[in-house]
Length: 99
Image 1: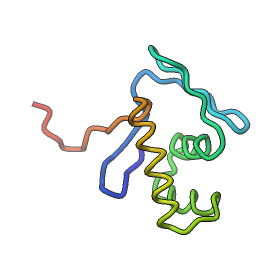
Image 2: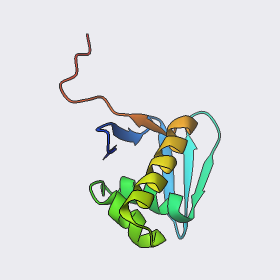
Image 3: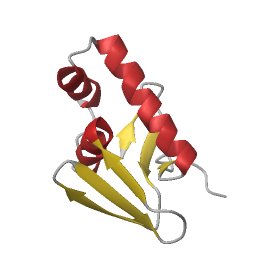
């Protein structure tokens, strides 16, 4: 799971399997198309899968040689793309009323 700057907690969608390989990530959902992530997208997915969340903007900044604002924008664009694809979903909030 990862937390966005506006407090949303995101996690890989249920029913996904993924393989991290040298320079790419293959994501295979139970149903739907397979997704191949390369480059920075693959690195971000790998960091999320490894449980690295607090430093995501810092890592993106280092890898892209960008400032914090540009890195945050790049990360947000990536996460939004994955939300649209359905491979990343909002996680239930702790203590949320499920009734």
